[in-house]
Length: 420
Image 1 (spheres, rainbow, N blue to C red):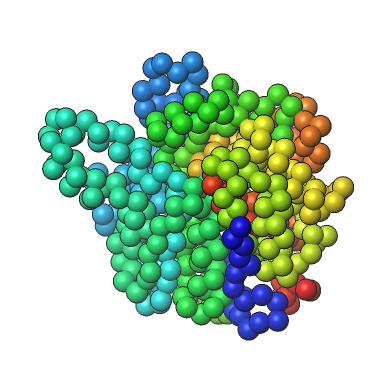
Image 2: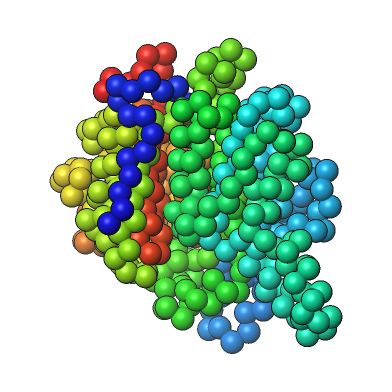
């Protein structure tokens, strides 16, 4: 088992890192304001899938983004040459920069990191391009794939659109935990001084390949996603992008920036226990690594944003892992996938944004579609209705196939460091 408690922990010299900009493209809202309103209202993004042909499937609901127009957000690149996931990624990055009160020109004068997580890259567009091989020949197909659907485009296109030259651009493909991996990567770069800012998060577009894979596993819900409910039937595939602006606290204070939250720490591990089944001990270990890196104890955590897919295996394993670490009275534990579906590589990034908004606006978003909590999932999942809460520290879980786990800890910004 590989385990990592990364970066400079308690007692080591490191810069404090804060979150100052949020970019959201989701099935329940575009932009941080609309996203926050939808989370508080418990809106659902579920509906019939239209992005690919669903003939032959007994049911095919998903959480698609309807009516997305990239034009306001992408002006320097040819939008027609960008895949759907890349359009989401670039648009969310532009939103995040504007939300932070920054300009591309200001960022271009600084050393930065672009770190974008994904599960499928541009598989959505690859599905549509397969016919080109038959129509135009494999050579044309290869050129098109290289230019349009390479997964690195999710990060490099951000640099091109914003005119950023002094940046490292990375795409992290650790499946459904990739958003948190990318946030951790950006956090390390900023707190260590290697970068003056990071644009990090995740992006994915709904695609036939992934839907079919989950369908054949028997883990696609026929109607909606019901995490932690005794009658849950599985996931709904979704899509979107969540991009966060991370910068040193000193920089944010010097320019009078709004601070959504402070990034306190994170943990990673990979147990390689099973191709698809999560490992309870490993999930507990990853959460413990994150808390230790953040320098906080379980009693300090006010809310857990769970991976919470709505499958039988995930929900029981994750909640039991939480109780192994937190004891008989764990913090309230919610799943945003009940609203957003499973947005794959974007999932934990959008959830991290949800956590930051919950801290800022002092509420806990609900787990919707909930009727009866599974007795094996002994948590308060805040069913169906948001509640007001004075949140100080929030934990965001991300878990992935192959045993890739990533947990990020966010805290409300305070003038003094949180007592460790």
